[in-house]
Amino acid sequence: MPLKFQFSDARDWRYIMEGLEAIIEEASFIADREALRLRALDPSRIGMVDLYIPKDSFEIFEMDEDKVRIGVNFDDLNKILKRAKSDDKVLFSVEGGRVRITFAGKAERTFSLPLIDVVGEELPIPRVSFDVTAKMLSDTLRDALKDAEMISDTVRFIAEEEVLKITARSDKGEVEAKFSEMGGSLLEYSVKQPSASSYSLKYLNDIISKAYRISEIVTVEFSSNKPLSLTFDIATGGTLRYFLAPRLEA
Image (cartoon, rainbow, N blue to C red; front, side, top):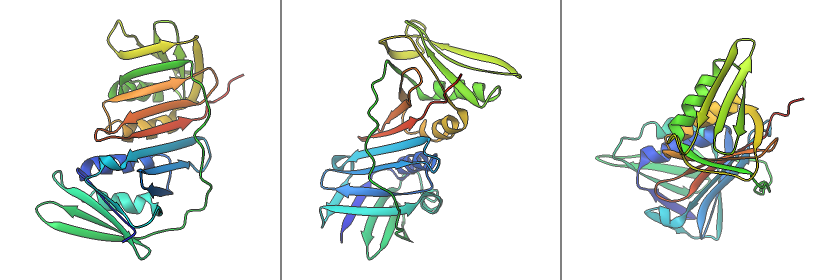
């Protein structure tokens, strides 16, 4: 069998896969001797997702080849993963052009999907140096973005020396959320220089509404008029990271 790997908690795996589906419809996982990886752009090339899970994070990780590509449709995959029970483990096995997904709990249930060919080049990580790094509770960021969505389709991140602001404004009004280490809403905060940048709320809310369940903490990084990076640490090991292009304003 070219590849077999088992994750300890099927529900947690489902949350990771839903986090990928937030911006991509289909993509290829790449498995090698070190890790399972996925890096893909959304169809409009505004957002990128980067998943990295080292092999030690899996209960089983066995390969017959040095590199295996697993092309999947996330809508089909996540319909299956929604059938997982809270105490299930999930086992993936790839062979003969198909991926088999087995939930192992009180009963053993197996599903099968055909692998798909996903056209696209292997992407490098964006080379961006960030002036602002903030660690915060992911549900706190989710709430701020939900507030902003009531006002506008664009949100602005503003980093001052001791305060991070998330703002939105339109003809409907204005909203502002403030975060600081002193107030307890930021766990860590570093500003090399004051920065401000705007981003699409649709993309951000699609991401955070799925990914906040992966980790209680999110690392937010940005610079003026440069991409935004959101990183979620996976409890068993690895990271799910997003990059989002800025909305340039006059």
